[in-house]
Length: 344
Image: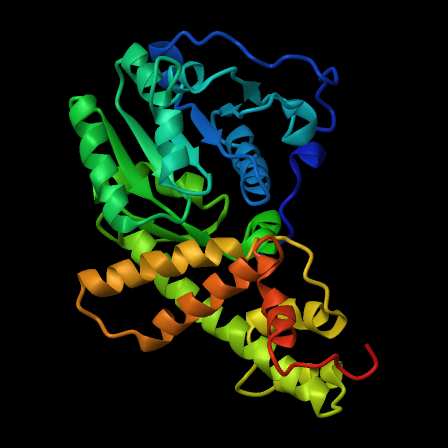
């Protein structure tokens, strides 16, 4: 969000509100009455999801009228301290859904979404309890084909009352923390319209077409990210083997055509060989597999994406999958014929 001031944290905004540490914020819903207030739920409080939930809570609490964010997770957390005062905790997805007309998912993939939806304590049971119309927003990176199938199943089981919107994001944990993510939105206009202001709390949402369009956009994004990170890793290994000052080189490249946001945020990681995880490299294998699935569905020739899928699959098989994407540098150094860089 260029030109805007730094988003305030929920703690800054609500510093004058009293909330006992560890106090339960769960409240029983009055279903239709609370849904009329447009309550929102969030599921998936991981490295990306937690800062996204904080921004969503801030936007809801500052709205007119103020609204409540409802959350649930596998393990109970102190939501007042972790997200912000006034957030409502729910022991299961059914309780959360009974209060909400919109629920945002930020979990690894569709199997995790399905797990939360199903069963007597699942989200769909809660929507059945409320009897109201609801929208599920999938901000995870998933298969667009699988997403459309899930939408058909959910619409059928709910008699059309519950529908899906896809809104995957790009920008990494840095963008999630800053509230500057690119939000790629797909869905029917009548479904996207009401949730788009909520998605704006994450960054810049753009409606790109019918359901699944966001996932296709994310696949395109990941093809570019994977290619760029692979090229940066290869260039870093080559430069160090030839005795160049890698930091000086990357600074110089940033001023030319090779400059990019990825180079900017990867520069120090590559120079210091620091690949501690922010977004695990293993997820790129999944994302590139979705890209190849889309390629086949659209009869599109994408040889680079195919090769990148092979490279990242090999990287994960070699034990680097839990580290940051820039770990491609270490993977390349460990291949046959590679040697320790000068001064290491």
